[in-house]
Image 1 (cartoon, rainbow, N blue to C red):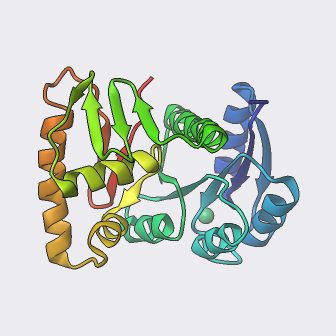
Image 2 (cartoon, rainbow, N blue to C red):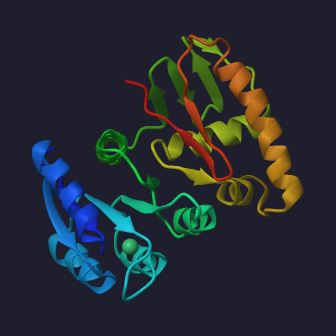
Length: 233
Ligand code: CA
């Protein structure tokens, strides 16, 4: 992959400058947009690899920016919002954002999120090239058509729901999936009861997938928001 181009959408000049300086120092190319309108224009004209999107913009809601970009592109979008705005994060993820960063954030966090997203991007590119029916992530292997999963070559004894959950997370590796999105995909609805069941299934799935403290952590919990499958190095 050539030097990735990052679009930074942020109306707050000091934050925007901190982000662009960080990107520049770490050898990324970047573009900046202070408004939603500029963001949509630059996203369509420059086709960046990743977008950092502040949700609180002066001219329009960041969620609307996501919806507009998603109408023509799957480019990864990482939203930026304040800690108190968990509901906004969930709405943003459900509108198609890939990840979120909470203000105030450190330079290390910004770079870590970017690395996760770029890995996801390169995985998506490889997957579309060989259209694989077998998923591999570290010692985890999923044979989608056969309906089985293996850890270190040993078959995991998963219930049908656990297998569905694992596949859903695997197919979206690197992306934060909200509780609502997951329960909608698994049960076709998202009632409070479904979200409670989801927690239970995640506990049993994890016991099988991550049996010991020193086994790799595949599934990351985002408290109050959802889960993400991490790409293991
Ligand atoms: Ca703002």
